[in-house]
Length: 338
Image 1: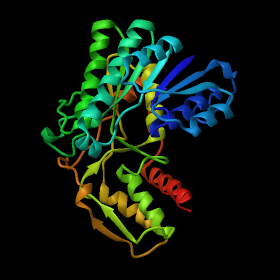
Image 2: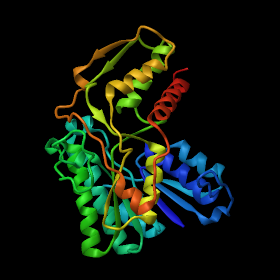
Image 3: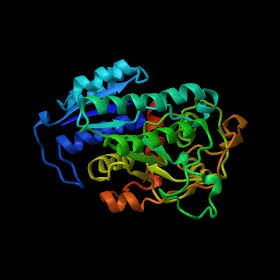
């Protein structure tokens, strides 16, 4: 089996390659473990940067794999990549994924998130039309502002009406995926991911940002002040390790041309997340200070998803609770703040 992972050096990409090796090579499913030959799996990563993790994990498990440095916005390079590797599965995770960055750099966000996806679709259509391709999109696409009841879980039939440049770019990719399926029969699958978090996430995202600040305070690297944005917002947070399991289930068991919410199905306020992380620290007297630069120009009060569709179609269920995700994220930052 040949698997191409774009953005393999990124947060979800690293967790995905680790999970795929464990499931395909060592057959670790629900606590079971049986080995198989390493030549059953070939992984090729495509990213804009080099990363030792990808090289080391594949070398350590003797998996035939590699990481190719590539700008997916360049059509000829993407065609060469797909034509040469001819993957069975593509997990398209590469993206400019920060909402705040997208407000400052909307053009780059659009180029990275839309044009790169089109290049992949076109290359698959020409060189390996039987390949299955999953594109990672976002819950930010939904018309949250038209939500009549904040307690209502958002399902896949909610209106698409993005309110920031990042969401606009992902909505376009989402529509392209379904269009290529309808027009050309491409086996395209869409994961509309809600917030996911866990060890290894960039501090550009709220949970990791808080965890890093707590860890640095504990290590004496910063003053005992945590800078925050909007603490009243409620969001649906899913552990990244559950998210990559969902991606695999969708591409293997989902219906092509369909979008699937990848979410916990539960809502938690940003203030609750902060309180729990602070409670895990032995340092007392941490001050909380609002930073206007961390507040979005447009924000929604409460968002949580309905994950019934992915459960019914693929049998996927989340296994990590939010407290485990937060504890593991804080511990990850503690190890790096020593």
